[in-house]
Length: 284
Image 1 (cartoon, helix red, strand yellow):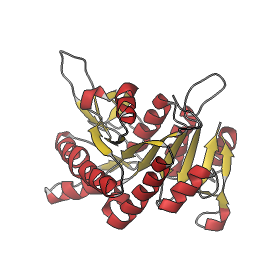
Image 2 (cartoon, rainbow, N blue to C red):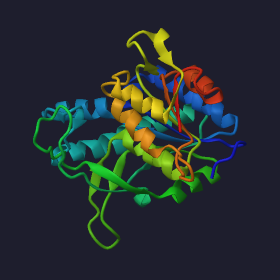
Image 3 (cartoon, rainbow, N blue to C red):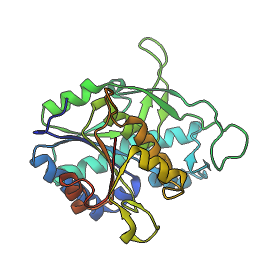
């Protein structure tokens, strides 16, 4: 699916990037520069701050357990409106302004993201009892041909992280899915050369928060050791673990490399052209 001549990539960024119009424009200008160089991108976005803000405007309080949102019936309605609507539309508009021929697509469209409801489970920070996160999905499959169809037409897909369950002729429940999880699933299914995860820190740091302690490159084994030793900690752990599970192995398809980068155009472009130069690259 991917070649050295036309690298393929998935870029994930959160709603905090979208809130800052100037920052979003800068990120998308970096994507546009790489697309002009022949890269093919899928953009995958979250929208946590926007969902929480809308929830509060409607007189409800967001419920978070272990850093993850509980999506009840009312919160699912908000997620549909915000992720599939407001945030996706704003990103597509900004992408068009940056010169990208962007197409917004919800994970529900054409069953792009097939999923099932996440069963209750014990989570860190959630106590000893299993937590039911409500209408939160686990990715079952990605309909790759839809994305490849858009790529073939010269378009850059902008994917909102809602998934759909069920089968044709039956019910089709909608699920809210973590954006890091969806991005990793998209990149793995596409056998993408690169998965870029934008974070506020912008790299794995051996002595957080000292930017001079940036670790440029980690093998999968080194990354797991860094988690065990506490070098990778907090919210970075699930991002890295999700990515490691989907890296290419011997004879196993998957993602070529995973990059943890900051949300600046130069960070993305320089890291893409020279892995490990600006963020942290995870390799098999």
